[in-house]
Image (tube, rainbow, N blue to C red; front, side):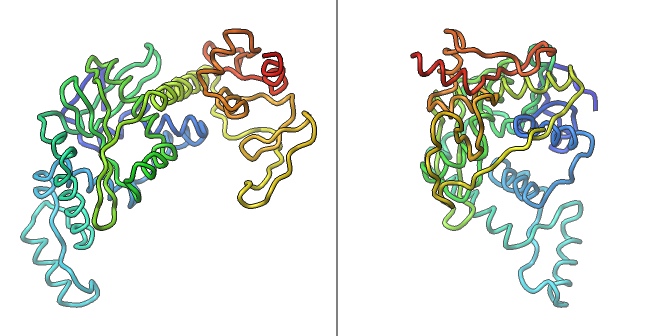
Length: 343
């Protein structure tokens, strides 16, 4: 399907959106983790998993309840191996032509989650505003990188509501899930895309609903620090993509042999002697090792923005690939230690 950049589309089905050749939120996070995996999946698109299908059903049930009932129907309860069940299933299929049957247990779960969201005062208020559901945005980031996003619900230029199903919707549980699943990266990427497409929003709001009864709901925003980190990661991902295109290489993990240590919770670890070896992210490294800005920040115990400022004030750094026009910076362990020691 041909897509113009930039453009806003209200007519795309979910499969059509995912079939377009542009970087989305999930692709960006794959680039950050493993460009080789991103490239492979672009050339060999994976089939939707059961979890992805359940996610689609859940979003439809909560965000488009009328469309959900017009598209799906509830399968009968009971033992699927028995004749009575098969007869009921066949009759329901005849009575719902063109619709897709959903297992009765899953149907009840989706309806329970939907009802719980709409019983939550703040969540119900946010979803009551007139807006666009799953509108597709396409833009050419900095004129070079084709990107796309599809917000769950957008209300004019005010806010986006993003629905998340989770195991733990408590403040502590969702903060952990946000870090683990990169929700701060998603927020930064979406807000960047909406601005590029001419439809910026002031706020990005998460509605989290637990997948088990009683389907507890929490409504959250991420703080400025989380968004700043998300923006930095988005830039890193787009820089990696541009570098991969320019060099025609899509690297996987390190080409070097690394000696790993088990996590501290598994095996107590003694502090390394002297400055010859340091531990970082459970990987033992020496002073000549190159660090990404994120790893440097973790090693120094500061924020990524602080590392940026240190580089501007004299901390030695260089492009990871000097032959690329845009390449993420790297810092040697020894240079980082020297800068910290000299204040």
